[in-house]
Length: 400
Image 1 (cartoon, rainbow, N blue to C red):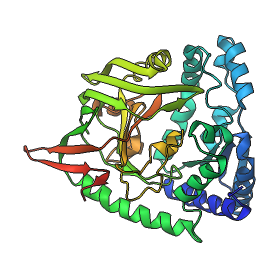
Image 2 (image 1 turned 90 degrees about the vertical axis):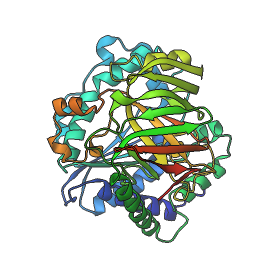
Image 3 (image 1 turned 30 degrees about the vertical axis):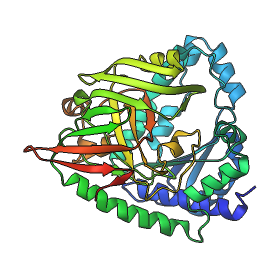
Image 4 (image 1 turned 120 degrees about the vertical axis):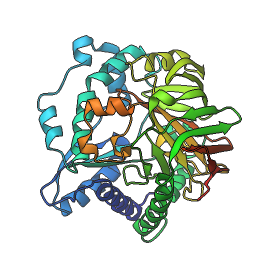
């Protein structure tokens, strides 16, 4: 295995950098951190657990269901079981200061025969936990990060050997460097300059064009571009949560998507007045339709993102959103997320964003957040207030 103990320790260092960078407030000894992991990620979970304990954190380790258990749950659970809330879960989430998720799926299609309505119902029932953490994060009381641990299932779906897949993870996260966090700090500094440039523009509308995309997005009032914040390891994307009401046109995802044990390919969305009015998928059509019918916000845009290929070392399809939404390659990528928006893209103090204020500004609310990725050669033009326009992104690079 290429992920030796030494590289796992570097991985843990990078995750700690991500966690501390993502949180507005500082961690202190005695803080509570939830360490969630899929079972194949146990080697990294052990190293991360040791790291957090050595830093004085109180760690709550939690192994997640394996594919068999998850399939049994959705196959056998009745309505009450689908929405069952674990006693004490709310209290735990209201006390959490940090969260680390080690994603390592043993199967990516194990729920393909499960009714998407059941998956949606379970997801909606847990939304209140995410809302709790969002509020804590806005106040600087919570920070989170996540990463991927290579598995045979991931490698197979990406048409790579496990060794090749591991090599991509090592390269993408700079684990092949003696001090990977130094590289992340440098990328963070460069990205900060680009975000400052973007946020200084009085943008009224973004026009995204590629072979199969012709989409207009309204950034909205009191917005800012964010990204490369430590939340995702790796992460090279800069993104905004637009005013969903101004989305018009056609979006196409030329990259496949693996979501809750289902496979979806060739997604094409038609937006009118901010909502998806038509949705097509070359594969996974029924799942797509059910997902965007999850709640009223699932047909609206929650995020628009661009990745500069000069940052990203990812140059292969990885069958995983975390990596594919950060793909560098020849032309970088953009992705559009249906569903929930991110309050940290609010230009003011996110902790002052009330539900009413979010609604007024066009921040979307949903139990869904589904990233759909396009890696085609593209141009993004900013139409500025006052009538001027300027190209901000072309051929995989910001025009900074």
